[in-house]
Image (cartoon, rainbow, N blue to C red; front, side, top):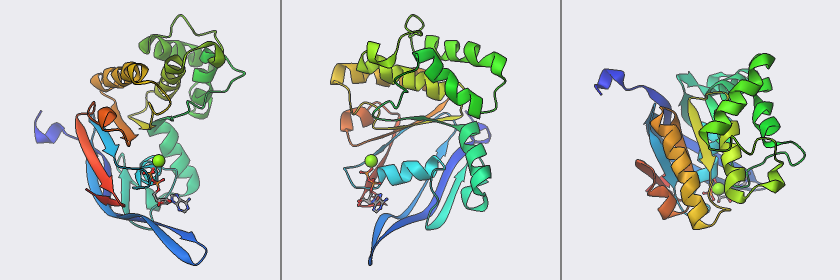
Length: 227
Ligand SMILES: Nc1ncnc2c1ncn2[C@@H]1O[C@H](COP(=O)(O)OP(=O)(O)O)[C@@H](O)[C@H]1O
Ligand SMILES: [Mg+2]
């Protein structure tokens, strides 16, 4: 690929994020800069408390920096109001969490369809898109099951399908294998690799070096700084 074909999709410049705790200020990110290009498979790795979730919340447009710049898909998030930020988030990002966060009373298919409503997808396409996403994670035969009827790995793949259904440019996953045994974790990681191979930017946040090793690029954080 020539340089001209590489498109920067995430850019952090001198990002600080401080939390006020009564009289004290906790510095979670202490001036971090990096860029991620479209199509990369990156792991943000560091020990507990190093600032990974804070970093992910900024990339995910769930938070704003105390100072510095965060640019997502060409937009400087400091310049967007809450409404515009929510639109950028739902148009650009899909989220996967450690504990899946599926709704227990809804079938797998209903869970995957749900966010499409908020992404402004026409109603008559919800089912088709959800079924496609479930087939991509090899859950086409489990769509009418409830989450408790599936294994941990299947739940996490359903959560990946939910993140994928609206075709986001970026999939962000925070410790996605943290609740799984290592063999099941490997299956879930290979699902992320396949998604990345089809062009989606994938970012996995983890404290686990074995998980980090699956990504094509590592960004290491320590005490709120790049390591
Ligand atoms: N909402 C918050 N209020 C105060 N301190 C926080 C908050 N969130 C995180 N922190 C602190 O910021 C630092 C980084 O936290 P976090 O980003 O959650 O790290 P990680 O995800 O790597 O474990 C830690 O010292 C943590 O205690
Ligand atoms: Mg964390």
